[in-house]
Amino acid sequence: MQTTHPNSQNVPSPLVIATRESQLALWQAEHIRDRLKALYPEVDVQLLGMTTLGDQILDSPLSKVGGKGLFVKELEQAMLAGRAHLAVHSLKDVPMDLPEGFILAAVTEREDPRDAFVSNSHARLEDLPEGARVGTSSLRRQAQLRAHYPHLEVDTLRGNVNTRLRKLDEGQYDAILLAAAGLKRLGFGDRIKSVLSPEASLPAVGQGALGIEAPSALGDVIAALAPLADPDTSACVRAERAMSRALQGGCQAPIGGYAIVRDGALYLRGFVSDLEGIRFYRAEATGEMADPEALGHKVADALIAQGADRLLAELMGRLSP
Image (cartoon, one colour):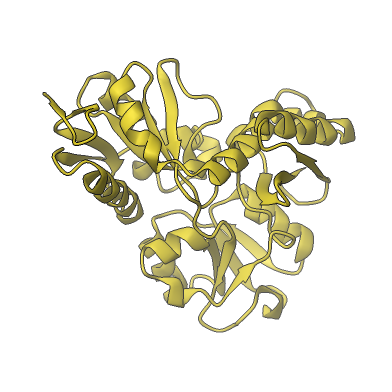
């Protein structure tokens, strides 16, 4: 099952990518497939489509049914069974701690990380009238909406991108918020009426980036994936994920984290809030590109010093308010 590619590295052929079967997940997997084919033309790169538990449960918020790990577990099982060599994820859907035996082998260059405002009747979020109904699946977006726009009605919106747009078009919502990256990747960029600045809606940890997961034992696969990694994006998301990991918030809490490269250094902003957007803790710091995790811990420590740890414990059911 192995062949030698033109640069004399041993790459499995066929090289199998496990992927969810949603339109966006397939786009992402096909994108990585095409990049791998360009790098290793002699290798047969195939997709293994799968339906995950996260795709099946559409009537409950993710925070109540097990979190974003529901989108990756079946893919990891396929890799463990030897049916696939790697999996492509929206990095914001990847739990902060991977199961033993797996690593993030590469993080690709980031697409637009911001949140997108989509509406058929208004151009900007601030134009929505009192009582307008806004849908989003994200506790992070919901909390920021409630904090900045308390006059709006904020509701949970599940489903794939097409389903969410259909619900908007049917009049179930006055506007919806989605990740700009997903809309652009699927060719729905023209549906975006405006994008929200990070100051207005701090993105999710890893938003806009693709993470490629592989079994840590597959050294040849990991080496083959290395050229796909983007150093700046990798450093940014390492800082973001270190912050989130230190906070131990999971999917049950509104957490945002977004890092950029600025003047040769990393600049990271983070927040933690309650579900209503009332108790809101913010922190930011600058750190070295060579040690993104240290920056993530620095911002997490600043949030914890404000009381974020107690708030997260309450939201996770570990403490009473």
